[in-house]
Image 1 (cartoon, rainbow, N blue to C red):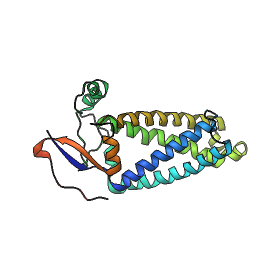
Image 2 (cartoon, helix red, strand yellow):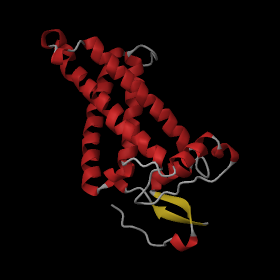
Image 3 (cartoon, one colour):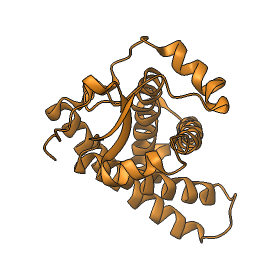
Image 4 (tube, rainbow, N blue to C red):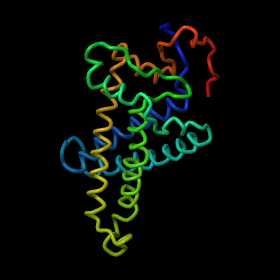
Length: 214
């Protein structure tokens, strides 16, 4: 096996990733404050920051969806079961024995089978739940009793939003942990900062060409 560097993450991809991370952290912190779990912010300030972060996140997601479909990057999330059991075994057992990862990323196939399923769950379940319930709360919360959108109660929507937020928190924790499981704890994190990742590949398959940055 030879080791070489490939340009894996484009500029917008990295901007979108870190901006989303910052906004999600902001919303989780202010969300816990709104529920009274932290006590570090004034309630009104927490609500204001949470609302602004929500609109920024919706805007970011809109641009990200447009980018994914216009660049074809949405194909990165198509599920596949090829090597899925090998990858699952690696995370459950092999990683603790120092075994090499059975999946090698390429610009056309950046995510291993488990990552694809996890990201698909995030994009098709968690994000839409947060988006829909959050927008309902932002738009109708001040006049909910009179408007009663879609026949839903404020409590029902708030519980859905909170449940989706906890799912996001679990995804975030797992994502951060797995991001430290590269050759060094900073390998994958550095790749998402610079765009370049060092990968192992058969010598005859290695290529020194670098794709154009976009």
